[in-house]
Length: 478
Image (cartoon, rainbow, N blue to C red; front, side, top):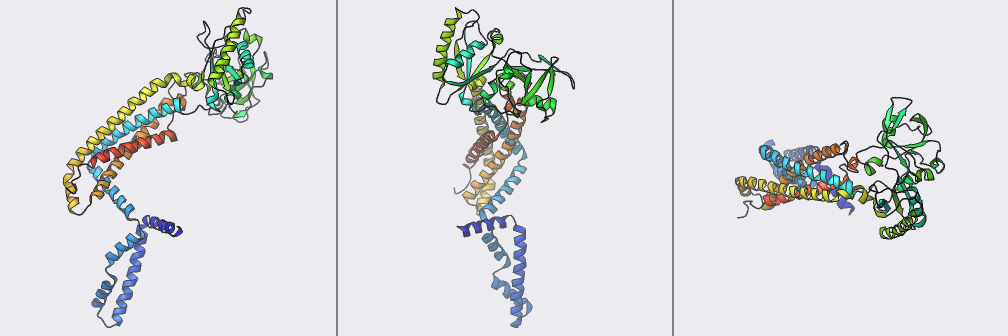
């Protein structure tokens, strides 16, 4: 085994050092030839005859060189390199066909990769949260409530009476864009602040980039103001300063202490409120004062280990019925008719059908690309029948010709795939920077490893099918 591996490594080294090995062989062969000539001269032969007999004994320098190359190198690799060089010359000669094929494959691959990247970000890739499959969106479908929000008292009662949730938190969606004025040091700026409950960030499984999240003391009514910064705002306004914890910002004329910075992987706006931005977060107290604001909270729960959505829905339904019974006795309470769904469905589920239809359309486009490329290569193969007949007459076997056609297809499809990948990277970058788009997680669209694997798979399909078609009309062994 070791000897075989050593031989393989030696052959690979020789393949990449052909010129140096040829020079070593020529020097060694010249020394052997000179030694043989001198030996013949000592036997009394004339110089010309001595040299002739030395060459006869060696068997010819050219033949010896070829035998040496075969023994030290890899004939298959040498042949493939020759085929690649020939394919390059052939494709340069038919520049029009080559450019058209590369553009056709590139547009198909680019469109496919771009759509797959969007599909991957919105539907396939897990949310950038801890155990996202256990996160549940708790909507309130009670009468006259189109926002799905609920009252503080309902949150407290649901958490106390439901055994399926390890925790329930939420945020208030009734905040305005630019509703907070940042003043003090630097240019004044309008910021967007989002009120969240004490358990909101821990419930999502987030770890702060810097500092910590809100404590129970900071979530009291009229407690000193504290804020957690989004990663984007921290980088943009504060230049990513790691010493911001404990500093104060002047918000609407009042000081607020910075206690933490969110991780870069979590973008609240992209996940929950696409098309907007969130610069900072402040506590939403669960108190009688906030309860009087009515249905002010959007709720998220985390299932306990072993619990499932159906069980949680059944328990929440029972709690909702109890709350609705209490509404008649307490006019300060609002109705609660909980409807549970996975957080993934809430975030991007409404786009599933449209994305699947779009993916089907792109699949159809790839079929058209394959069909058109196959027809193009078939026509090209028919035009090259004379060339193939001559190569056959010179001794080229059918296998060698088939391999040559496949390598040409590989070169074409690889060039098209590279062009398509460049288009996909540009397209996903533009989509991720699209301002005001009301599509969740759009900022996370990118060509990642999964998209690269997808691109490779469709490129392999494109390069093998046309090459297969292009080999049917080879004028060999007829």
